[in-house]
Image (spheres, helix red, strand yellow):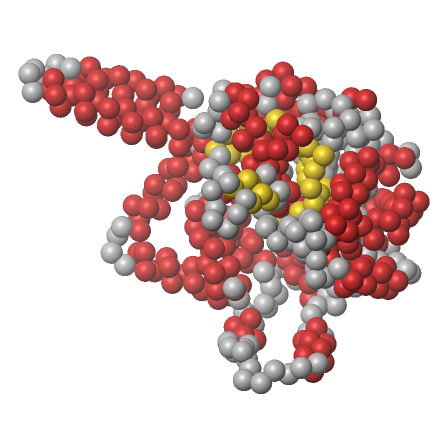
Length: 538
């Protein structure tokens, strides 16, 4: 805090100095004083938000780039990294179409698509998360949801007077999901409501937008802020940018959970929302939802729980006897929840649900337009037109599986999760990060470069998620992994042994890029690399 005190003292000294000049400074001094005060206030805020070290590094890099030739050199080096990240992709794009064919291909496009599909990675059982449907009945389930989607592919719930069927399905998906998450509990108040969305990110965006507008109505907050643990999903960063909300990321505790005391220190008169995850994406660990709920209630702010991953596992794991802490609307203080149906709900991709404790909050999600020449318009979600086929597919998935089906699926994936955890612990060079509560297992190493291990796994067809702070990997276990757990552990052990005996990145691997990003002190430069990579990929 010394830096803040020093800057404040400087501002006061400047004001004193300017006040000594007469009479010219009677006009100039107040202007200069305001400019200096504004600059210092902005500087103090920036340092407080990003940390002194990050600000000094960013300022140093900015000054260095002013030196003739340095900026062009830095840009050229960044492009080299982007080119390496894009290795192999540019040549593939050379034959991609850039305009419509003069004559349509008719039904032959199906054969063309089948040929293109063969180029996809062999994802069956070897991807972290990604595809959640698996097991002996996978083909039947795929056929069922595909038929349901096809049957309603022409529908659009925006026209609720025309396509009453999918409006009905959406209402039932929301109601069934809410029932899983405490809508029948007396503590919930019995008003749980919501809508289906395109995925977890849209569900989170809507919850943040609704919380912002609700708190503006309730408390008159015009400069909204939200507080999240560093383990919370990056969708909150999107929401902060889209909706002009200041975002505070707070370090987690030693158990990789949201630090309630640390979050409390960031709450102020502009706070609209705090966030918890059940579980967090990086390490599969449930935040202390009850404590966060009490905190939210004590300050009268909204509290969103991210159940995108855990929503279709935790309720059933609890029924199976697992010690799952409270995480849903039964917890007082929880105002909204996001839960993906297209993950462990085994619905088609592009289906999620956002739920609210009551209609008073959800009403702020809607956009109603009264002065458009096209007529009166109201839309519940970010999208206007929505694919009714996906809603029908989600309803079909939930109805076909039922509680019994989800209980059996949960039993299998929780069992394989325990097996993978024990297998990783048996590899001396590795350790499990934290204590996973669910079906995500993160692991790291103090002996070998974990990103080189990842490259070895990738070369053998396994696609895991690379994490940072700490550098680690995780596997999100699904029904796909039930039959291949032993193979995964063997390949992992072999990969660790290979890296230990032959340290150094393999040709074409991403370990050098991940390593460089982790060591790069200027996070703004890392951000530029990611943006440049995405810009050249689209």
